[in-house]
Length: 114
Image (cartoon, rainbow, N blue to C red; front, top):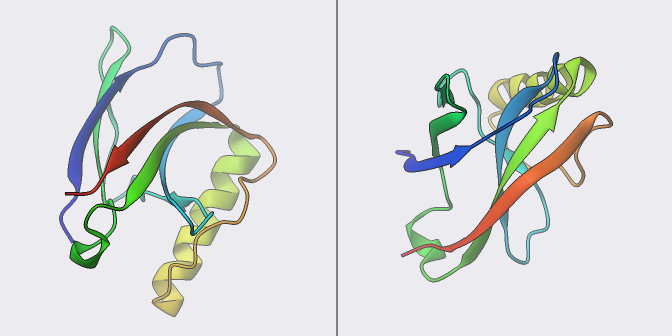
């Protein structure tokens, strides 16, 4: 599935934290971390970043999604990667009911899938 281009600006990310993007569909109430190994977040020196995110699928026309920028410490980063590895092995992406300890919402935007 092809991702949608997204962008943002981050300032003051603490040492040892990584930026992640999660897609949070309205009514599903689960975070779907975007796998940075396949959809990398490209960080510029001035704090601007660009990435791609898979925001639903064609049947989700007119559905609302929140796109969260998440800051994850080393432990949370490892848990997100473990979740994604399990998804790949099981060929199932159930989403995370909650973010792992050590992950916090940095910012978000609400979008409607066309």
